[in-house]
Length: 232
Length: 95
Image 1 (cartoon, rainbow over the protein chains, first blue to last red):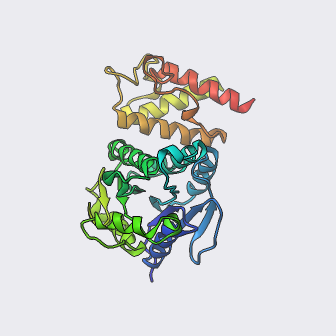
Image 2 (cartoon, chains in turn purple, red):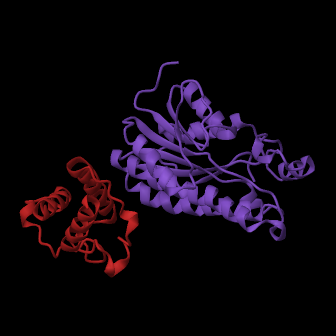
Image 3 (cartoon, rainbow over the protein chains, first blue to last red):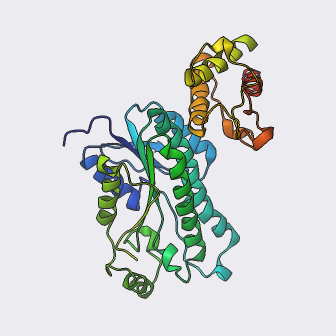
């Protein structure tokens, strides 16, 4: 595969799950890929930078490294955590960590990469939400709230970045077979999937296909949107 | 050093507004309804100052460390207050 000129993507959460799949598929599609991850798991053809997205200093340090990447044109914020619990049984530390990684981490990375892309006057940011937001799924109140924050942040940030030729969108998948939902009972997953328009569990490849659409120059006028994988 | 910072900030403003940097008045309003810059230009100015500080002084400038955009008290409300703000930050970074 010939490398796409001037097309390097930074992918957070690139050591595992959805982020790793997106990093690998982007690489396979000819993009240069820089993975950001708290614990680095090597991936062929992908440069890795240690980064805890929930730590402002760590994100700033990653930003210094990305600043050297002249071809950076997109950020895919795939880092995220989940914890399915009733609100009454969710520990305070878990609530704070969900919001810290999913929402604040997305904000930190958008702030960091947004500056780099604004300097270029073009680019693309893809954040991650979940269908748990529109479905308001019982047992996912804190997780869904953190992702609802990501959606609102993304829509407003899209307006800021439009001045600089950068699009900002959200991809919102339903349940996918990754470690993120490994502890969720199968019956609960089936119930969620049944509420999607396309009532089957999405795959990481389904998500990559939507991300790749947003990375395509043809999507330059799509911004401030939330794309639900499988529909809701 | 103070004169260099002043020239740097005025140069960055002049790049956006046009004209001679030396002729940029320090009371030029940067934020608010009477601002000379549009919001997009203000971001461009911030990024340009960041870049010039890195290139000229090796200083990484963190706008987030101050309530830089908080209305009338903002350190960016005029060219003059921005020069003072950048000068203070450069001094503290050099100390």
